[in-house]
Figure 1 (cartoon, rainbow, N blue to C red):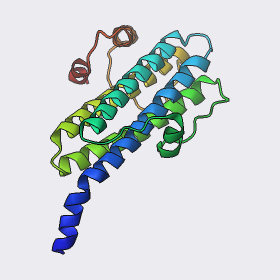
Figure 2: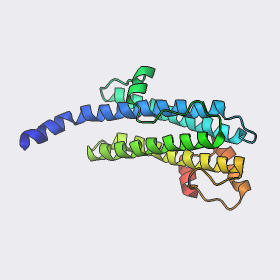
Figure 3: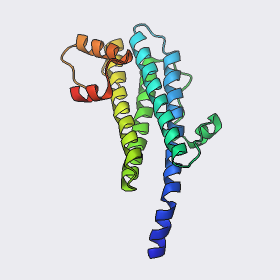
Figure 4: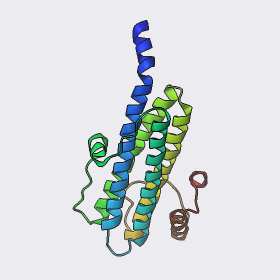
Length: 199
């Protein structure tokens, strides 16, 4: 039992690096999937939705940078090549042939949900190892993803006039308020902390 505990403690840093590299691959894959949606949704009325896809892709790119820097900063090697990402990402392949707005929103939302679950697991694992720096970094990324899901759902609702692809994570009194907040977020004028304070 003592030998097993000692081995587990010794292996913890290596396990953490493996988990972070899987998360890095997933973030890089997700950024590409968001860009795929951004480039190919061309139906009328989706300018705002495309802007939200782009902003979410930028956010996830920042996540990937921070994860990679954390990996290298703790003695590991960040693995982010296309071939490595294809092998390690936990996301399902993106339906690259579709240009349908509903299918693209559903696919990006599903990918964001999977990424959020991975972030949550990694945050809990980091906290369990006593690595509170990594836990805080990943927790901030998780808050960003939850916000992105809300904005994509709201932008889709405004573009189509249909029910959102998933329940809205933010509440708004009027459509004009939603439009204004989406535009502020796309322009970088709403921070994560400000958004969470409005939920």
